[in-house]
Image (tube, rainbow, N blue to C red):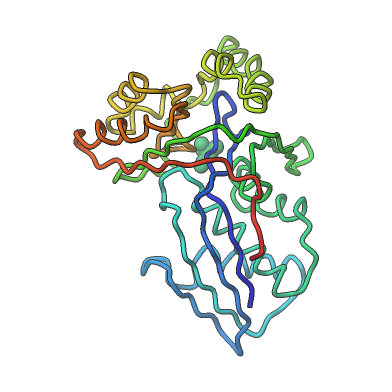
Length: 292
Ligand code: HSE
């Protein structure tokens, strides 16, 4: 039996759409155990409790890729990561399923190999990368179809407020509402900022971050499908905000802030809005996926 811990992630950091992702100290725990036959799923929501379960399907897919077999498997989940809220819950399932297959087969954990497989299954690398490696990662799909990723150091003083609403967004819908092409001005807006963001996270350079964390690729389009986006942003900016962004494809909004006391003030103000906004005080996770 093996227990695996996978962190939640926040993708699309700043102008790094489909590239920059952060690992956060909010976790999904998976236990894998080989059984005599078939499969057992424990702890999953009713609607995920069948052979289409993402962890199970990924587990089988990985075994197939590796040319391995197990007699049967029992998979248990214990998750603190909200589902369909832009905090990488599906990535935790994909990464968990791949790790489960590797470990039950006694194979060495090659993180680069696991990352490429996870990126292929997820379809974009910016959640699976920080989920595997931890910290802040930059990733892309290369010309030859493989995925590449690098991990960047991030100052431990950074504080993140994940503002999780009581409604979901679908990544499919959130991708469909984005334009198919962009102006040169918008493309340059992103490409000129990305290097500064990486160093500013490493150096806790709040002044630079405040000035360069904008985005013109997804946020202007997706904010329309996140109820109360403007109200939540205004509250955060009035109280304490170094940067305010949509986490992944939403619906969670992420506020990077400076003073510990601000979290309670923001929570209090959000409680007066129409929707329920859960406020999670988080920090960076530097370990990525670990076998416990
Ligand atoms: N980069 C992806 C998107 C992340 O925004 O569509 C999805 O969580």
